Image (cartoon, rainbow, N blue to C red; front, side, top):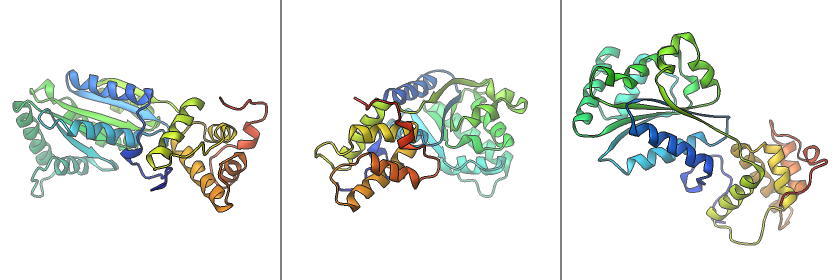
Length: 278
């Protein structure tokens, strides 16, 4: 292998376009065909929202004649801060402008892009962390087409808490502007096996089966199908196997990884009464 296959750093090289990701892609692309507004993509911690966000963003960036994109990865900002971040992403000269000045400059840019036949798409990661006031500020950008002809799309990626947040009465106007939504599920047992094999292949491994069926069963039950947790456990198990000179990863290495990982279920207990995977 030329690199670690189970790194926690989001890397689009390792992206596996599963049916659930295809669906999320379709949701975003379908939204971009309609009038401007909001799209909500949610999922538990570690289900791949960030890498999916970057993959969709990269896809749109290849169509610069149609789309202008902006990406806000850390949205814990006040109203002025979020407008400044958006202006920076769009390359707008702000010269120390405050909130209303920033909003005016961004609006002017949206109108200009609309005249040129391009849509502005704003991606916000970890949107559940945004203050209500900041979300309401974004609502102005997502509804500008009610007053102008400039389409602005806001794609919110967040944990399930985002659904609760948007349900607050203070955000009812924004919630009503969500045109499409999708929740990323955890991986099932068969898909997890495909996921592990894919990451090993992308890392340069082309040998015989490295994780036994029982190890994959243990990995699935201990990780609950959450990709990030599966990465943590698989990496630790792989290192444990390497350290003892073993050529396979089996249940004992997964169990060792589980005992060293907070939030992981017990691989051994979860396998009681269960048959090995296919």
